[in-house]
Image 1: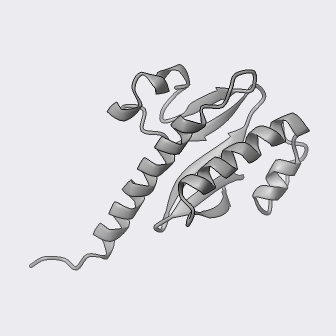
Image 2 (image 1 turned 45 degrees about the vertical axis):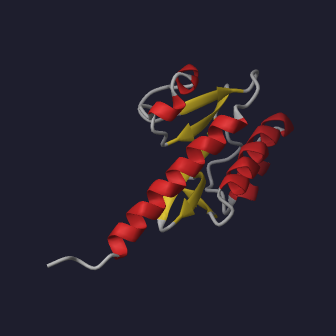
Length: 131
């Protein structure tokens, strides 16, 4: 769906390659993620927009022909059931169709949980080994 094969240099460049209606969806999700985890850093990874926090990838999001994809997502997490299942598609992936309202509250909950997981992993990694 992208207009050319060259890698985007940043998220602005990635978003600019799509029609205005899709740009709106991408920008909205971007803002929701930034608001949910203000310290997260924007990056391009695997040629799609992503955010990092605590030294780990927080979340990827990408435009597709009929939907925005969000991943990786803990599909089996009890806090998100059954709300998450209507968007689940494949392993650890959610698909948000363009013709439906974006579930911003759900995205916020997912991103905050993933940020906590990343911070926990980072703290564990930095902790001195017990002898």
